[in-house]
Length: 318
Image 1 (cartoon, rainbow, N blue to C red):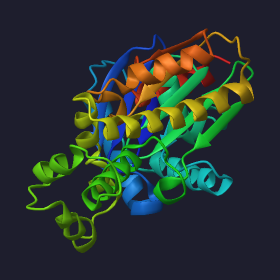
Image 2: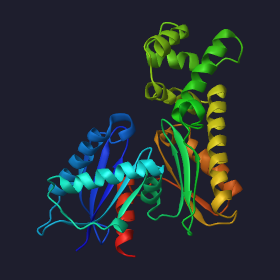
Image 3: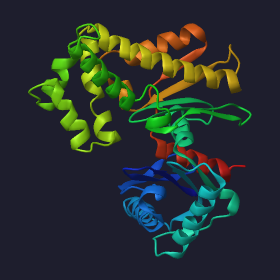
Image 4: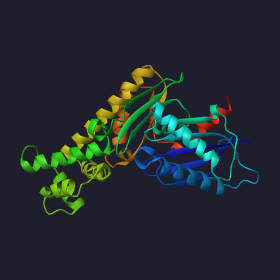
């Protein structure tokens, strides 16, 4: 029996799944963050090691656990230097005391970014497109020939169109413009006041600037815009429509780059933005399918860590 490990490592947590060659998940565990660029190599190693240890310990396996392959899909990993760093982490893992018999060959170690494992896990195979719209945004695709294309993912200053952060910023901007009298009336003023318990919308200054809010705190305000749009607010719906247009444009760019206009493919949507009340998922799907009739927009079938496990298994079958 072949066993493999699939690792999904991000800025908030690390997920590990232990899978067999029948694609069954025998163990799963979560640990702390594993973005080495933000928390350092040692902390990243500790998180991955803890996730592996707990996943294996929690599995009901009578025989010894021989790991034939591993895939690590980590946030921010894409450059050659990043891959070399993670290769070093894999070597350290094999030297540490884990309840595992390592049987890895270089060809059975897969190191990639988290967009690829989100694609593979979301669709169940390594062909298609993932449109991730959470705190940030990125669109990533892979075709049958193995060619890939990434659009976006440039961060909240340089990009992230269609993300929760950009939706929240546009919402606050619109509310303040309306308060000034520069734009039409919008319920976003009251929406932000109620959500943040403000006496006046002017108090946004204190919240955003003086509390030194970061990207995640601001992105968490996107539901205010979503709720207003769901209730029919014109300004909020314009913001949501603009987000949809950006995400459709990015997805269309990926299709044009590595697929054909009549390709039959699936587009999986991941991230908090798609779970809103204003039917942004339906708007996106309708707009994209209008351009590409053979495209099917879906929610994820499996989690990214499962996708990492599938990529690891693929190396044992070649």
